[in-house]
Image 1 (tube, rainbow, N blue to C red):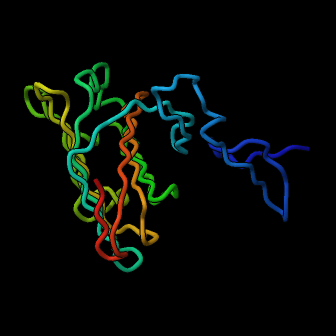
Image 2: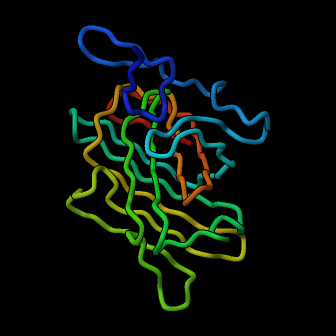
Length: 190
Protein backbone atom coordinates (compact mmCIF):
# COMPACT_ATOMS: atom_id res chain seq x y z
CA UNK A 1 0.00 0.00 0.00
CA UNK A 2 1.35 3.44 -0.97
CA UNK A 3 1.68 6.47 1.23
CA UNK A 4 1.90 10.21 0.85
CA UNK A 5 4.25 12.57 2.65
CA UNK A 6 1.73 15.38 1.92
CA UNK A 7 4.39 17.55 0.29
CA UNK A 8 3.91 19.19 -3.09
CA UNK A 9 7.58 19.03 -4.03
CA UNK A 10 8.23 15.30 -3.78
CA UNK A 11 7.43 12.28 -5.93
CA UNK A 12 7.63 8.50 -5.60
CA UNK A 13 6.57 8.56 -1.93
CA UNK A 14 7.37 5.35 -0.10
CA UNK A 15 7.11 3.95 3.40
CA UNK A 16 10.43 3.74 5.24
CA UNK A 17 11.39 3.47 8.90
CA UNK A 18 7.80 3.92 10.06
CA UNK A 19 7.25 7.10 8.05
CA UNK A 20 6.58 8.22 4.52
CA UNK A 21 9.15 10.06 2.41
CA UNK A 22 9.43 11.12 -1.19
CA UNK A 23 12.15 12.07 -3.62
CA UNK A 24 12.47 15.86 -4.02
CA UNK A 25 11.39 17.26 -7.37
CA UNK A 26 14.20 18.76 -9.44
CA UNK A 27 13.91 21.78 -11.73
CA UNK A 28 13.75 19.28 -14.63
CA UNK A 29 10.68 17.64 -13.02
CA UNK A 30 8.98 21.06 -13.08
CA UNK A 31 10.18 22.16 -16.51
CA UNK A 32 7.73 24.03 -18.71
CA UNK A 33 10.08 23.72 -21.67
CA UNK A 34 10.54 27.50 -21.93
CA UNK A 35 14.17 28.55 -21.64
CA UNK A 36 13.26 32.08 -20.49
CA UNK A 37 11.82 30.78 -17.20
CA UNK A 38 13.63 29.39 -14.16
CA UNK A 39 11.72 26.29 -13.09
CA UNK A 40 11.57 25.16 -9.46
CA UNK A 41 9.26 23.67 -6.89
CA UNK A 42 8.06 25.88 -4.03
CA UNK A 43 6.55 23.77 -1.27
CA UNK A 44 3.61 26.06 -0.56
CA UNK A 45 2.76 26.40 -4.25
CA UNK A 46 4.14 23.45 -6.27
CA UNK A 47 5.97 23.79 -9.59
CA UNK A 48 6.64 27.38 -10.59
CA UNK A 49 8.05 28.84 -13.77
CA UNK A 50 9.77 32.05 -12.71
CA UNK A 51 10.28 35.02 -14.97
CA UNK A 52 13.51 36.95 -14.48
CA UNK A 53 13.66 39.78 -11.97
CA UNK A 54 16.59 42.14 -11.72
CA UNK A 55 18.37 43.19 -8.57
CA UNK A 56 19.73 46.68 -8.12
CA UNK A 57 21.31 46.15 -4.73
CA UNK A 58 21.79 43.11 -2.53
CA UNK A 59 23.26 43.10 0.98
CA UNK A 60 23.85 39.78 2.72
CA UNK A 61 25.23 39.54 6.25
CA UNK A 62 26.24 36.12 7.47
CA UNK A 63 26.31 36.06 11.27
CA UNK A 64 25.94 33.33 13.85
CA UNK A 65 23.15 30.81 13.12
CA UNK A 66 19.74 32.47 13.19
CA UNK A 67 21.17 35.99 12.92
CA UNK A 68 21.88 36.38 9.19
CA UNK A 69 20.21 39.19 7.27
CA UNK A 70 19.39 39.89 3.63
CA UNK A 71 18.26 43.11 1.95
CA UNK A 72 17.39 43.21 -1.74
CA UNK A 73 16.20 45.95 -4.06
CA UNK A 74 15.24 45.28 -7.65
CA UNK A 75 12.87 45.78 -10.56
CA UNK A 76 10.16 43.50 -11.93
CA UNK A 77 8.57 43.84 -15.38
CA UNK A 78 5.92 46.58 -15.61
CA UNK A 79 3.21 43.89 -15.91
CA UNK A 80 4.25 42.12 -12.69
CA UNK A 81 1.22 43.20 -10.67
CA UNK A 82 -1.30 42.88 -13.52
CA UNK A 83 -4.02 40.50 -12.41
CA UNK A 84 -2.58 40.11 -8.89
CA UNK A 85 -5.23 40.73 -6.21
CA UNK A 86 -3.37 41.22 -2.90
CA UNK A 87 -6.56 41.07 -0.83
CA UNK A 88 -7.39 37.60 -2.16
CA UNK A 89 -4.05 36.01 -3.09
CA UNK A 90 -1.05 34.89 -1.07
CA UNK A 91 2.59 35.77 -1.67
CA UNK A 92 5.34 33.20 -1.26
CA UNK A 93 8.97 34.23 -0.76
CA UNK A 94 11.75 31.65 -1.07
CA UNK A 95 15.39 32.49 -0.41
CA UNK A 96 18.15 30.10 -1.49
CA UNK A 97 21.84 30.56 -0.71
CA UNK A 98 24.30 28.52 -2.78
CA UNK A 99 21.44 26.29 -3.96
CA UNK A 100 20.14 25.47 -0.47
CA UNK A 101 16.80 26.80 0.71
CA UNK A 102 17.37 29.18 3.61
CA UNK A 103 13.77 30.21 4.23
CA UNK A 104 10.33 29.92 2.71
CA UNK A 105 7.50 32.14 3.91
CA UNK A 106 3.97 32.32 2.59
CA UNK A 107 2.27 35.58 3.42
CA UNK A 108 -1.50 35.10 3.55
CA UNK A 109 -3.98 36.89 1.33
CA UNK A 110 -4.36 40.45 2.58
CA UNK A 111 -0.85 40.65 4.09
CA UNK A 112 0.21 43.28 1.54
CA UNK A 113 -1.42 46.64 2.23
CA UNK A 114 -2.08 48.91 -0.75
CA UNK A 115 -1.88 52.69 -0.75
CA UNK A 116 -4.99 54.69 -1.69
CA UNK A 117 -4.13 54.89 -5.41
CA UNK A 118 -2.94 51.27 -5.77
CA UNK A 119 0.63 52.08 -6.84
CA UNK A 120 2.32 50.68 -3.73
CA UNK A 121 1.97 47.42 -1.81
CA UNK A 122 3.71 46.98 1.54
CA UNK A 123 4.18 44.25 4.14
CA UNK A 124 5.97 44.82 7.47
CA UNK A 125 6.63 42.38 10.27
CA UNK A 126 9.51 43.74 12.33
CA UNK A 127 9.24 41.00 14.96
CA UNK A 128 9.20 38.09 12.51
CA UNK A 129 5.77 36.80 13.51
CA UNK A 130 5.28 35.19 10.09
CA UNK A 131 8.88 34.00 9.65
CA UNK A 132 12.08 35.58 8.38
CA UNK A 133 10.48 38.18 6.10
CA UNK A 134 10.56 41.53 7.88
CA UNK A 135 9.52 43.71 4.95
CA UNK A 136 8.33 43.32 1.37
CA UNK A 137 7.27 46.15 -0.88
CA UNK A 138 6.25 46.83 -4.47
CA UNK A 139 6.07 50.26 -6.12
CA UNK A 140 4.78 50.90 -9.64
CA UNK A 141 7.29 53.07 -11.53
CA UNK A 142 7.85 54.20 -15.12
CA UNK A 143 10.55 51.57 -15.70
CA UNK A 144 8.70 48.65 -14.08
CA UNK A 145 7.72 47.59 -10.59
CA UNK A 146 10.33 48.33 -7.96
CA UNK A 147 10.58 45.75 -5.19
CA UNK A 148 12.33 45.58 -1.84
CA UNK A 149 12.82 42.68 0.55
CA UNK A 150 14.20 42.56 4.07
CA UNK A 151 14.78 39.25 5.82
CA UNK A 152 16.35 38.55 9.22
CA UNK A 153 16.89 35.63 11.54
CA UNK A 154 18.44 33.56 8.74
CA UNK A 155 20.83 30.67 9.17
CA UNK A 156 23.19 30.91 6.21
CA UNK A 157 25.95 28.51 5.25
CA UNK A 158 29.13 30.50 4.82
CA UNK A 159 30.45 31.45 2.42
CA UNK A 160 27.45 31.85 0.15
CA UNK A 161 28.45 31.79 -3.53
CA UNK A 162 25.02 32.96 -4.72
CA UNK A 163 21.60 34.09 -3.52
CA UNK A 164 18.32 33.46 -5.33
CA UNK A 165 15.06 35.10 -4.29
CA UNK A 166 11.79 33.76 -5.68
CA UNK A 167 8.66 35.88 -5.36
CA UNK A 168 5.39 34.09 -6.12
CA UNK A 169 2.58 36.63 -6.46
CA UNK A 170 -0.64 34.66 -6.74
CA UNK A 171 0.18 32.30 -9.62
CA UNK A 172 3.06 34.31 -11.14
CA UNK A 173 6.67 33.73 -10.13
CA UNK A 174 9.72 35.95 -10.46
CA UNK A 175 13.30 34.93 -9.64
CA UNK A 176 16.36 37.08 -9.03
CA UNK A 177 19.78 35.47 -8.68
CA UNK A 178 23.06 37.16 -7.81
CA UNK A 179 26.60 35.87 -7.37
CA UNK A 180 28.31 36.46 -4.03
CA UNK A 181 31.92 36.64 -2.89
CA UNK A 182 33.98 37.63 0.10
CA UNK A 183 34.92 36.28 3.51
CA UNK A 184 32.23 34.41 5.51
CA UNK A 185 31.18 37.39 7.64
CA UNK A 186 31.30 40.07 4.93
CA UNK A 187 29.70 38.57 1.83
CA UNK A 188 29.05 40.89 -1.11
CA UNK A 189 26.41 39.94 -3.70
CA UNK A 190 26.04 41.73 -7.04
